[in-house]
Image (cartoon, rainbow, N blue to C red; front, side, top):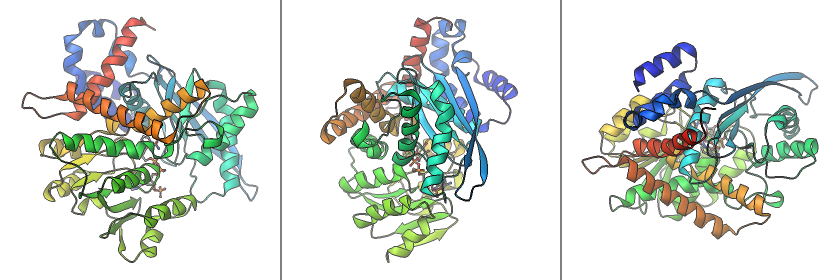
Length: 445
Ligand code: NDP
């Protein structure tokens, strides 16, 4: 395989999909040697088949706001690859959503889900709808209108969506209610459900918890731990909240959170009531970062800057794609940061990753590090199928085991001749091989 040729073709065929190109190139560069050692992959057209989604749906979502005005948004579902299980991946509601972003997320999801050890394929969906500033009733009407189209193409053995940016338990509730009404079925069709109607304990915390478990595993390879470490976190959402909670439990001090318009720095650490206040602000649907800084004396709001300029031992980006650039990476290196672990999907730009990988910073890619969310979604599907509910401890311990197993797999496939671990390579190779072998077994389809 020649990566440049594959990319040239892809970019020519699909211009205007930069995030998707970025995600494909990163994977191909990691797996090129494995592909060249397995010529039967090439003769089976494996890469060409892998980088083309099975199908992509787009649909109109008309809805009415509280003043009676009609709005039209666009809905999407990308069913990327189901070689190892039903399509699985979140729904994102955010104005930036477009087909390039959803294809990058769906593509990444294939390998992430493969790494979890659970039988789940890759998919992603969402809408360019902006939930911020909308009333609860508007959110409900939008979710219902979205599901009026989505229900035709999903199913508990076909495609099981979940939450992502802008889609939490409330939105999953409204989506699920409409699905149930349309199909007359109460099945595990969505994950991230409420606890009283099929959800799993620990699911809301799972992505953030998993990222922290993975960070700890990486540190342990160097004889280090999170205890006493200063951590910069970005974002102010579900993943950031779970990560901050677990970081505190494990004895680390979190000093930043962020939003699109700047970051909060709190020298005393973000703990206790401050974590609860994060949830309150998130539920308010309004701006959150500045009000957070206003509430606590020790917190200051730094406008239009990234938290990566703050001196920290560990950096955990938990907001969105491409939020950490090469200048940020240089700041982290200059400040003697020891570990960067991605909570969000593809938060580091390629130039930043290049700099980080040349430095001594241990780098954990999101594909492996944030897989705890979808893994716990997989555990929610298992509980739904068995019609029972595991305890908090049971789910957390399974999550912990899965993150440990993902880390071991990354080490196995990512160990370099000088004894370092290339986690990007390890995650991509391990995630890819399982899917590739399944595709070969199943023939040219
Ligand atoms: P949320 O919507 O709950 O939170 C995202 C947060 O990031 C919001 O506070 C948002 O602020 C903030 N944000 C958005 N853009 C920027 C920016 N450019 N700079 C700084 N902050 C920004 O989403 P999640 O926490 O669920 O998801 C965060 C990331 O983690 C995404 O990349 C997602 O794909 C990934 N992920 C999520 C999983 C999950 O289980 N939820 C699983 C695996 C990965 P505002 O609301 O003001 O826009």
